[in-house]
Length: 503
Ligand code: BG6
Image (cartoon, rainbow, N blue to C red; front, side, top):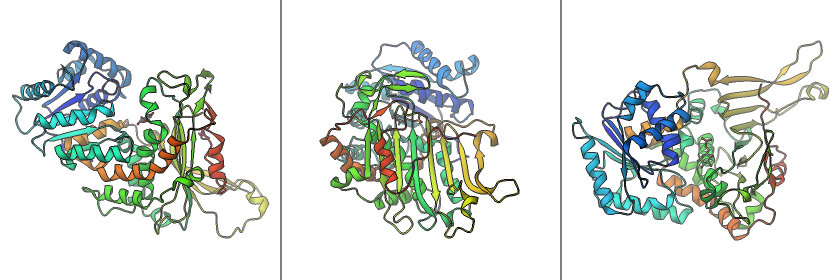
């Protein structure tokens, strides 16, 4: 992300403007960018929806969203009133050609008195099945004629398998150049995720150890206490593999495993990440059960509250075969990582909400200490906490105070909240700013998305063709199915316990 440039005049057209994503994420993020003075002077949001809303209704709905979800808390009246003037609403049917002519007209009206070139951002905050239709109509209406200034933003999941992703890329490729397409993976905008690059490539200390000679294995966990909430219909067609692993977790894996980039310019980082995806060992269909575990939550208890099982959630089939938990063991076939397991797991309705990456180092080659001295020995471990804890911990052994030589694990810790008191921008703030600046570095390129799908396709196919006979196989409020423990125990490893022993 460019820290100095400010975007030029911009109109953001949000398809699905009256929907949940605008309400919870997009508009609160834009409002915070506005407070931080990153929003250009000449700026407008044009929300598009089917609902019959007046501009005042639309603004007050978004105001409520900002009050509820903005990281800066409730909006001060003067600030909101000023910002709200940039927000406009257009009722329209996405299937109608005339809607797109209206959008064009509205953009022209809104930017009539603006000086300089105007960025046009088309944000697809709609269900994936509408993207093809909308982008085709955008193209036909000539809304993106200026390739330098117009961009399309697409939420994940991009397609629902390799074939549909390739198809969507083909359609988009007829209308846009690749540099105009911003495929969002919001994890890439998280401060702690961007910090992985800083940690790895701005320090000389760890890079020499960052390989198969010193690292025993890597664990990436994204565990959520939340269930599927009101997203049952979406989630039924998705599941944990498509919703989380194909994008967020594989992107984290790439950041941990990639080679050092020559620079942070242009496509360099994306090239290094896609190299990792290409080096991931393909899991053959008959190996899926050895490398991957699926789970679905039944009813259970979360923090003292009884919660229902997945099959009883709204819009979920009573015999659903959708996985709400997935754990996969990957290997990366290259010089740096040969034979180092990368364990990925994610699940809904787990006992803790935490996203973290644990890098476990190999034991010392020779143990000089006597057995009784090291009864509590733990491996060196570097834990990168993505959320809600934000920081990095390094675990090592130290001598316990006393007359005897006895060792115990201790930690060195970097905590964002203790070190900085400035507040951390939300992922969407960072990403929306990059869209306005036309900087696609933190977004997914077509080849990355396709490589990620291609890795997962054997698992997706085997799981779809062979419905689980054991679902539900974990109770809400636990660490997932027992098979996930077995997956990693086979190689003498253990998942990090959740909740983490927070100091
Ligand atoms: C989204 C998934 O991409 O990420 C959700 O669709 C998930 O199912 C969410 O809950 C997690 O993101 P965050 O930023 O809330 O951890």
